[in-house]
Length: 399
Image (cartoon, rainbow, N blue to C red; front, side, top):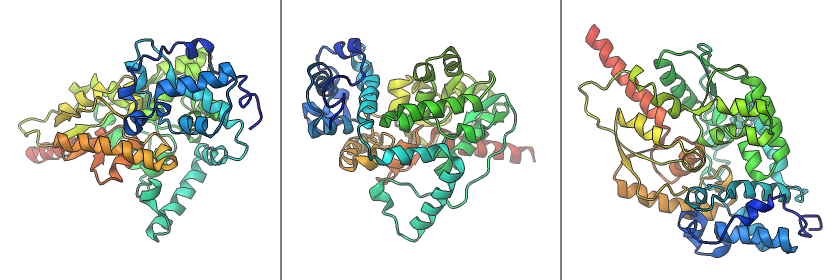
């Protein structure tokens, strides 16, 4: 590799950010790859030290460096634990962007571009669904869910709020969007749906280092979600990036857009009084909540999920302090062994909880955990079913 990066002239990291880590090690218990391997190269501290050696001292970008960076889940669990406020996520994104420029042949360059084209993604998804049914695709090994052949068509019901539908989740898990839309509408508001220009938020591209592509997708998304209505997001990874458009694009318009973005549970928790009450029914469901990393560590908005579910079910907390499940966007497909090892720690915590159902507000987490045999649902899918039962019983009582 011969380039500015290989010669160590720059990884594009802000020098002040790079110098902010004091190597105290308080991040280590919160890093899933360090917990699994016990190796310094697989820790935030070790990765930052490797970045310094490349950027400041001209060290070679060798296979050891690439392996260290590529093995990071980018869960950012280290950030809340850091007393120095190290912005590890932004350093990883800058490093990945520098590295991707040198990888002239990389599947992510072309593969992630599909995400911005809704019709093409839907077509390819249907082809994949057929291949799954013919058993031509090793779905579990690739970390894929069962992809539906036919998707429910969503229709707008008003313009009080936007529901961001995104790319992979819309193509593979549109039924989740349908549940979320019904729950939101139960509060009495109308839901607007974006067009094809909001086909992808850019999260996967950004994490892979494709910054220009992520910015292009962000600009399209902003144009498709015009106005001042709140933008509700039911995918933690999408929500984290949408809330960060101000930084990604760097304009006042982008910052104003980001201020409109809310995780759907953040929005709903202040409107629980508008939903029907459980009445005399017992809270029979026992649910363990797995906090997606980008909801807990990046958005810091995981608590509303618990508050929303607790109104209708018994919620039990996992005792692993929000440790990553190993999904990490495309991480489970790219690093299957590490992803499986990280997931096993999460599975142990779920088993200890005694819950029969796991709720998680991120598609990657639900797919990754379900592939290990867990019953995993989006929190508002669970709530949608409970509300349907309540309303059906109320209707019977009236009759």
